[in-house]
Image 1 (cartoon, rainbow, N blue to C red):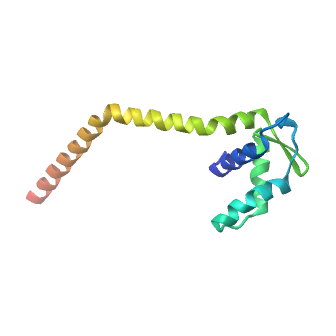
Image 2 (image 1 turned 45 degrees about the vertical axis):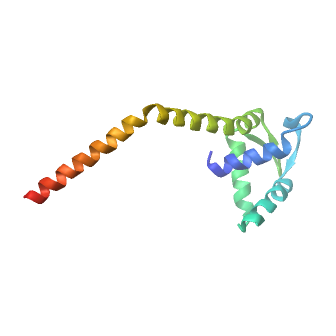
Image 3 (image 1 turned 180 degrees about the vertical axis):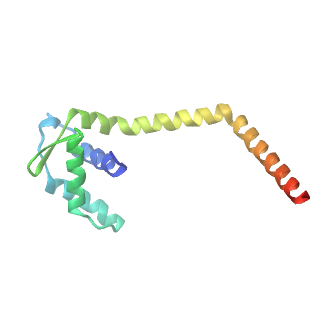
Length: 128
């Protein structure tokens, strides 16, 4: 799944994932286009209907949506992914930041070692 598909799935889940029986709610291709049109217009980007359809069909192929003609349905897998992907990304970012805070001195030492090594190499090459 690419980033645009993740974004598209998240937008669909935000718009259609609430209420009673969201897994049974029909989502027409036209309603998806009308949801996306203001976003694309605001950014000055062209809305390519075939590209949107291709991405929706890809989401259906990998099980995040189910398709029936011109209509799509959220799957449980799609809803769970759309709701957890942002929090997982934040968790990974927090873990990386914590790792950097704990090991910043190693990175600094490595940078200093590289500077010394490059200096010695330049001095040796200049001396020859």
